[in-house]
Image 1 (cartoon, rainbow, N blue to C red):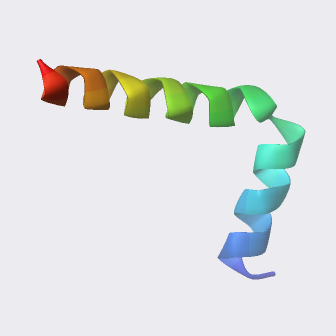
Image 2 (image 1 turned 90 degrees about the vertical axis):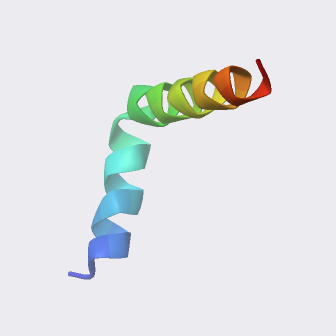
Image 3 (image 1 turned 30 degrees about the horizontal axis):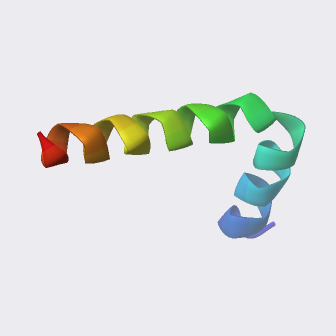
Amino acid sequence: MPVGQRIRINVQVIPEHRIVITYKISIRTAVRQL
């Protein structure tokens, strides 16, 4: 099973994980703008 496909399945099973990643990215962007 390709790694990309496994990651896609994990994102579907755990949508909170994708929210956490978006949260971290938004924090990183906000810190960069300060």
